Length: 316
Image (tube, rainbow, N blue to C red; front, side, top):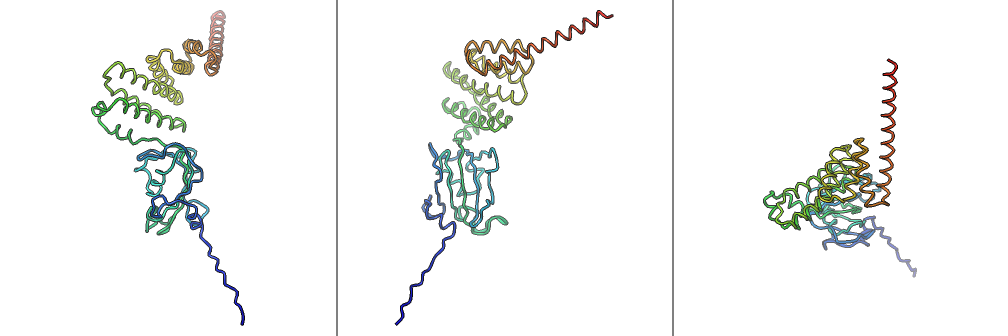
């Protein structure tokens, strides 16, 4: 009698099958599986938010993504419910927090369906997405408010208007950081318009509106400087000073604008006033030295020009 050795069957799992072993079921139907690689912090992404993300999509057995944003220094901010065409990606984002990096496996019904997306995505394909959420803004409230006519906006609580303006300004700040200055200017001016349309019901409301306008004027002034528009930069800095005549940022912006306009005495006056309030501010002191140097060079050129004119007159 001979004894047979048992036959061993080795079942090799595919890459996606291996991933599934360590992923959580987001919806309970197996259609969206998630693995958190790097946790985020704060609240999850709300409905109708605008998100700033890097993402890459992969097919199984492929090391190269069929689409990616990782080559972009500044990815486009996308509005949920409008800019994302992949249902699974939108649902997955609602489970994420700021700073989080996660992997998702999307079954065809949450990805590209039975048809796929020829020639890149085959039919009935399960896809892997790696997603890093850089930032998001809860823009749903702002979108709804901006869609109202001014009469409706005036009936909303002032607190709602101020929240909306803060969101709009945050969009502007995001564009500014990306050096998209025209886009930033449009957002700041949008916030300014929303506040300008408000009919203040009391001195307290007027004060709150002015305090919301102040950072918009300061941001607009700096943006116009970046766009080489010193006259406009000066206009917005002066508007800021009308609200707060002691504001050192506004005085500094005036100094910057006057310097660009070669009005050195005016630049000095603004900066000396700012320096008196913040004597150890390095930006103010550095700009003052620069203005003084430019002013001296300008005076020297004028002196040289007049000297040449007088010599020419004497020679006649």
